[in-house]
Length: 202
Image 1: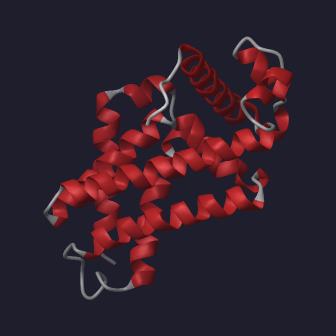
Image 2: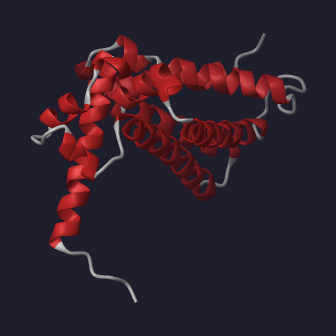
């Protein structure tokens, strides 16, 4: 039997989400080492010690942010793959998903790129495992396309192309203003560039 969700449960979940979003924003702006629990608490209107009611500490907060973003990527990517039948459309779907994710989660991507070293070993292992699964999902999709020569079966080259594509897309949050990221043309340009990078000939 499912336990009913109470108003108190909902309020706690909402406060936890608010803390996560505030922490991601502050980590992106100042770096992990430049942010205190008091800073995070103040951003959501609570004291620093009150954050402990939701998370064990600043490192646990960082782990929750980066594990969740990795889970969201692999789960979203799998949904795309499972819902699209043809190879080209599947690849386009993955590109569109990742572009949309990167543009909508710029702060979290900045934190992921810069502050992974501050994770606990357990959280770092979880993030790496999820990231490997996401890369392999893309490699499988890319291997189904018509690439020049036998490159569709060369695992090292597939991995290189996928990681280069991620670098192209994920660099946008570091180099553009929020207004540019929200512009409809930005996603289209990034998507076209990512597709060209994946299929590039040498």
